[in-house]
Length: 229
Image (cartoon, rainbow, N blue to C red; front, side, top):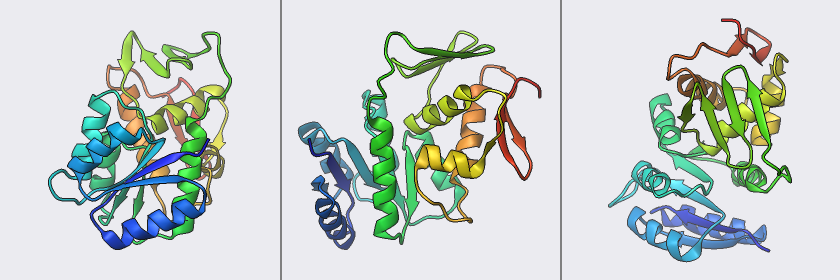
């Protein structure tokens, strides 16, 4: 079955380019040129992934993403932004986006990120009430829920996948290259700080209810899940 992708962007040149490029790769493509239209299209097209621009009339991408998540949608969202400031990237991720790409971008990189997000969405065959436990953190793989000290953590799909990788490899050093390959599935620019942004957000959420820091930075080497602070 072909994956459906909804592109929500008011820039006709970008929309046209994405429509052609994604269709050439075998995806069914739906488009909307503003946030309100995009939300309506979401209901009718039931896409497997959304490519969402930030700066749009009527509703911006942040608000569209927030409404999707509040409505219970778990569809992966790749956010496009012309703003390269960290606070705008963090705002998009905090509103439920799974990844972001700064304009202008290469179509090849966008396609790689689309493939990675769709791979993470596919069932992994792990059933039967699979759970991972590390100290006071409990991860339910079937429900895709994480609880720490009795409190449910509100994680985005990408944050869940990142924590899942750590909990599969407790007390094992994970290099930056390994994490990027496993979670994003594409070669990243050496200047990209997407991993650092996600690590910071995951730490904030896992420590929100007074939990000690468990994701440690090993300077110059990578990250490790361990209990010592």
